Length: 191
Image (cartoon, rainbow, N blue to C red; front, side):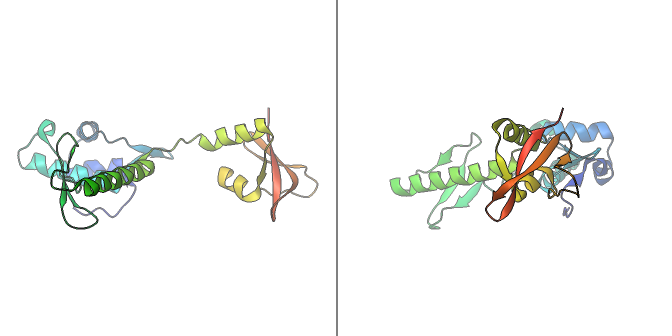
């Protein structure tokens, strides 16, 4: 099945596979897929749905969840020179025996860089990170540009006529000079 929705609602998985809610959560747990919230609904990524599709087909073919092994697109991969394959064992070791020492080091280094880049993008974001950054800016007395404030709070700070500070949630932003060609804003924690 092709997945075109990303993120994909967890509630739609029951209909997709014609299974009950508990069976959906059993499969998510077996594949170590962690749904994330948007509003009051849970979602998973399209890549997770593809993995669930593979598991569903495995079960339809008579397999069990505990003996399911997902084929990985990284099972074999050409090196940048296209001269050899790097084979991944079940223990995630790289077989570089057919490569020269220089090719082996290059291939492993590039593989590590690729895995680290992927991991950075898969790392779940902290929904409170922006509040922590604002708290730190308030404590340190930093002056933030309008763009920096907008990135943290989701809107551009603007003072209305006669106001001394822009308030958003539990933080106030006081205009404090310039940062380059933008207004500068001092962050204050409101009590």
